[in-house]
Length: 269
Picture 1 (cartoon, rainbow, N blue to C red):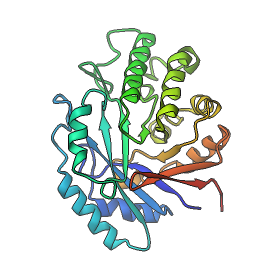
Picture 2 (picture 1 turned 60 degrees about the vertical axis):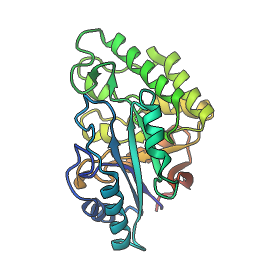
Picture 3 (picture 1 turned 45 degrees about the vertical axis):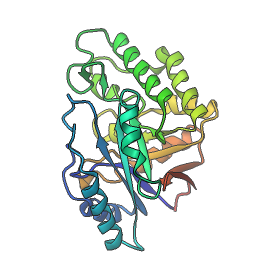
Picture 4 (picture 1 turned 60 degrees about the horizontal axis):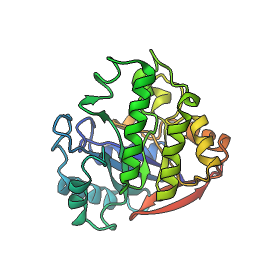
């Protein structure tokens, strides 16, 4: 079956580890037919990755990899836009000089709430209930701003709080539903991020419950991504992601090429 890992970070992201071609080799070894790089584009001055991305160098390395792996692997060039609602004008200016032919895929994500990073201090000074509510509120604002193709790891906060405050999705159904309805209205897809499986959560981001809500509301566009920051994790647990999608009622998944979604059937061989 056709299968791509649509969330991968090379050394062009501050937390990536190796060069683009190393990840491409890993994708082939994992039996994938496609890989899409989604390097962090962070405009928050407090973020570690602020001003790290050299887009020209990134694009050149992806193009070199496309020549190296031509006919064997489809390679997409994407970006993970941090807090797109807070930096909308700057992001639009940055993207205005880049055509859909150049940028295949845009993920939108939230890693900060106010001045606090999810992986650092956020949630330490309030209850778990308050932290999740504040986080989902920020995600809703990001989706309302739009200008990206797919919402990354909708319930990402559970990666950092699950040990102390496991996410009970039903308690936040109202605001999560608002997020899902907004994505559908704006034609924004939903990512099934498999990083939570290998990182000890034993679950995708988002999990089955939220994916079922999305499907029941009429959501159709879903992509799969390992969120790999090293070649060894490329393609990790995508099969579990597919099984989760099936359990939620999906029979297709997508990936983006030149900014347009392509849907593929879930067929096991």
